[in-house]
Length: 507
Ligand code: ADP
Image (cartoon, rainbow, N blue to C red; front, side, top):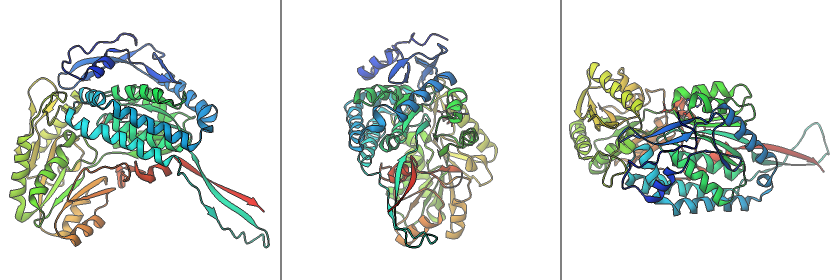
């Protein structure tokens, strides 16, 4: 363990964006009360390039003591100081400015995401960073539109009396936000955007695997002019920093994205002060291809539904249901798409699929594959780790799978899809819903009635028809069942960062 000020230069990473390289070579501290500080313990932890397993840099390791300081700073910024007295328009302008700054540094952020998470540079450029920019701009617009209502009231026990009643929507307060490693920057944006628009203050804990883009975003937050303490960023481990944030008595709301298992821990931790909780958790999303679909779109669509971000998406289309008469054609088509994918280091131009994020994730995915084969599944393509260096796994299409297998029931969070035939619509809906999750689903058909019927029958937060993985800042995202509580994005997200206050005035 080195000290927080000692950093490695990331010199082993050749050819990445020079601004990203410069940022990597600086010391990585915690953002607390507008200042970059070492961890109270002096500890740091390593961040690794998943394409080689080599350390990129050391980052200050926040724990309970740092979370305490950050929550204190967020509390002070919420209760006094310039933030609560800013006009909605001023708040909106700051958020917009943050979006502009992020856009200005798009190449740098794409490089950071790619080196830290392993995702292809080309994807980070067109998806992760622009979506984050757009989210900030969308939420900037909402800052001036957080409205209450006027309510005509009767009060039967006060005949003749007159009242003026209305509601105010006020920020929920200090928010603890804990995010995962699969879309490090975008998840930070999804969390920060609505919290800032509504006037909350924040302690953000990035995932220990991927803290770099959140730290660079912290610099832009200060450059944009947010008052000190409004956004605090404390990288650290889940069991220490994350748990301390979720349990903190002075945090009014915990917002979490990650595994369902940790989601449960957040709920338990939040019980102490009954803080509000929103959760965006796991999934095992069905993707249904009917025989009448435009297969020239459905086949690449089904491949991208699972292989996008290496299957490390909570809404990945990981259970593929194909109508019997086109089963062979679609499975062969998706397998052919899988074979075409160029796998390599994310930060190398031309890569279409990078490594999984960590050795732990690699072991997890490989052990699911082994369990699948043991239970009788067969790989149409893929099924193995690639090479010995880095955490690469072959894009995999499994057949001969059944609903009692782990590979069908549990979230793998890797580039592995199970393909299963169906021939009856009612049975299909039951199979699609035969999961504890309910995050996303896809339906591919030319029959508009079938599309809407399936959209109604499948119990999931998002249904994509003749498309998959389409996200927009204005479209709410979140889960039914054990996929979560609440929604991210859209105006629904704002409701979850506000308290409704009723005011009643006797006239
Ligand atoms: P994964 O299993 O895919 O790594 P996790 O759900 O473990 O996803 O992690 C998502 C986020 O939750 C990370 O920021 C991680 O540090 C954090 N985390 C993990 N365990 C806890 C915990 N017990 N309390 C709070 N946060 C946690």
